[in-house]
Image 1: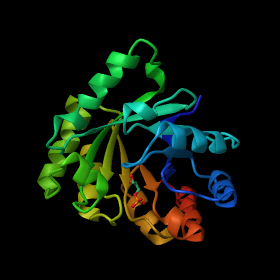
Image 2: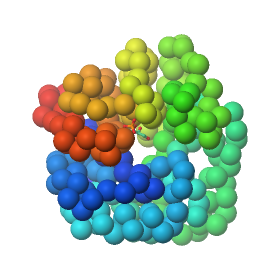
Image 3: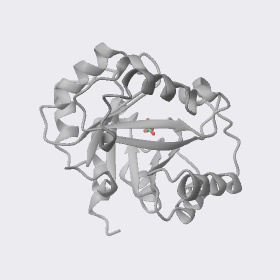
Image 4: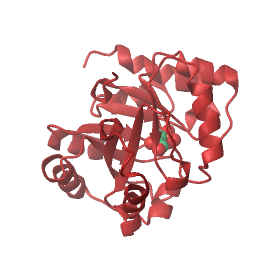
Length: 230
Ligand code: 1GP
């Protein structure tokens, strides 16, 4: 069985965006640790199933990051469930989750479920707008969220989400310093080996998204961080 704790690098594919077979093959054969399928808008049962079946041709772990109940389906190795801790709308803390458990609680294999404590930091991102996230956070806030996630909620993953923007390294360091058990995911604006390496020094796992659709070669170079000693 796959072990999420060992993952250093993940490509995140948006089911609402198109990708060629050739680019998809390069990503899946790149030595990345896993693929996540997830997005904010226009995630449907149809586009998720299409992308899932294409990625399934390759021998690497595949996770669905759940953004709505309608597009959840069997067939993934893992289901990543975000709870956006700095959202000002309870829907994104546990509202969607409540609906999901009412409908599917009896069939869920909780061994496959990974609960992610999200902190969304780019105010211009779709995810910040959709979740009404309070993004003007300080290092003190990040430390407190990290403590909340690590010591109190005891979630397996904290996800610092800068989606579309390269983040503030001091925020990443602050989270990393507080976490003893929880795995730190960082995502946002990674578009080169250098930007990947900087974040990978502090985050346990980096997530690479947008650059896949802008410059596949640059996206592929980010996987080289896996060769760094930890
Ligand atoms: C998005 O964190 C991921 O959820 C990756 O961010 O798209 O900016 O690479 P980018």
